[in-house]
Image (cartoon, rainbow, N blue to C red; front, side, top):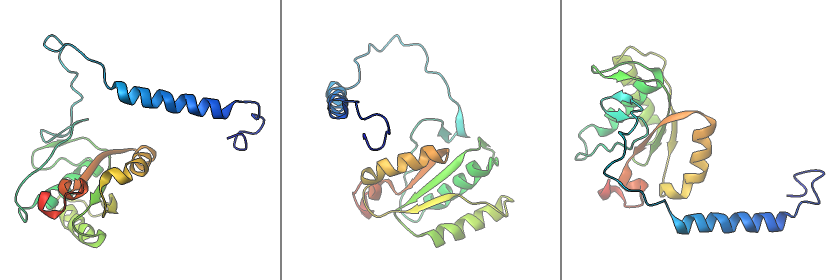
Length: 171
């Protein structure tokens, strides 16, 4: 650290890093504060990315048997949100999209995105894509940096079971 901060050789880096790590561990062990529920004010409504399908800041899981079109729906939602195009009578808020894929590959998602785009009048639609193999928690740090750096407002995880390390039968 002293080498990375020229002129800061007199800062007690070892002590500061140890103090920081101790504080992080203590916060982790302490956990979230206990709150009394039952009389909380109404939760502020942040609205929807896709109304009424995707509330802002909330996790949405689409669950159905394999082969029923969940991935095509995810691609449709991705195209709509990336472009800000209302679809299926749903009002859409525009933001950048990252599609994390444990099931197919970039070429298949590209084909689907082009088909869906053409169907909703978008000839030139593109989203960020990553083919994934291992559990999502192993890539969380790198993904969080990418999400922050690229203004990603919607992350599609296809499929949750495989992303959690549970395999194809669990997602």
